[in-house]
Image 1: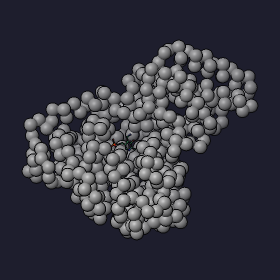
Image 2: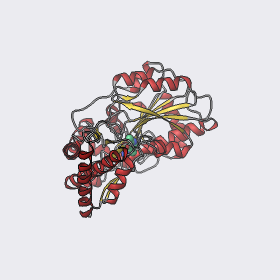
Image 3: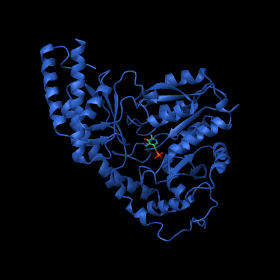
Image 4: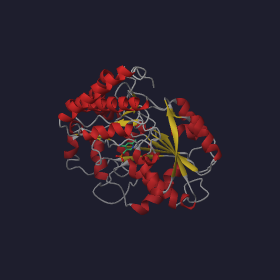
Length: 425
Ligand code: PMP
């Protein structure tokens, strides 16, 4: 990254002075603002207020199931799976609606693969030293799952079209310990990347030394568009066509569609993987919360209803992303101190500062009353080796707060950046 300031000592001193003054002014504002997690705002939650009155005395699913009771369908209500099957690109018979959080389904898939035998495996993962590929920057909770379950993590750099497939192909071809890869294919957390057709093709066709290799396709932002409707290739169909039908688990949820934590999660995969999942999960639970599924189906109605609902989210979210981009552009645009992504959907912006500055920016922001996701959270074990990526999640604060937060972060980026450049002279 080049800067206008670093060649000229006097200009640099001026910039540093100015940044120090602005930072003192920022601290004087006595802010107390939080940007740590990308939660939906209360205004977004209000869009689903009707859910609180549903199912409104109804309790019978389309197939006649009494949703108040134990019993079938263990795969979840058909009418809800019908709504989400096109969005998640999974044939409805291979899509299950289960639980309230996709993260718990990812957790359970890993645990079942560790303690049982996933289709195609020669043994339990728990009896081997296994590793997952982790595209970076990535989602901290994926990394936390690996850490928790003793799965080694191998970082792979992201490109504009997804993980660097040359690196991925070389690793999985030669190392049978590598059992999987984390993928957030659409509007990736945190950089907003959408996987290209080429990436989908190479993921589905690549040779893997492990016969039981799995893609954890976390499509958390499948319908969360901010600008147009970007499509990503159908990984399940691509894997089946390439002769690897069991290679992928698709995950999704309504967490950022209706109520986060009080929604419905989805798992889609090949018939063999779905049967394997069912066999394992029937030991764990007698069945999903069908009443919650019923109210979601009644509320969203159909795939068009889902689309219309997401457009209402977009109206709230898009100005927030625009605010971050505008303030960053105004304050950092010609400094050379940072770059940031302009996602077309999802929940996050990745801010990249000068090497060695991200932790300092987050520390300075905290001291000025702005809590930001810890630097390093975007990498396995919280370790960003270049210390340069910061995750920005603009969804929760109001527009007014965001204006202050975005400005505050730019002041910290300028102060940390100019201090570093000064120290390097
Ligand atoms: N995956 C990704 C990529 C996410 O960003 C999030 C939410 N931050 C989740 C999963 C969590 O989803 P859920 O609430 O369904 O567990």
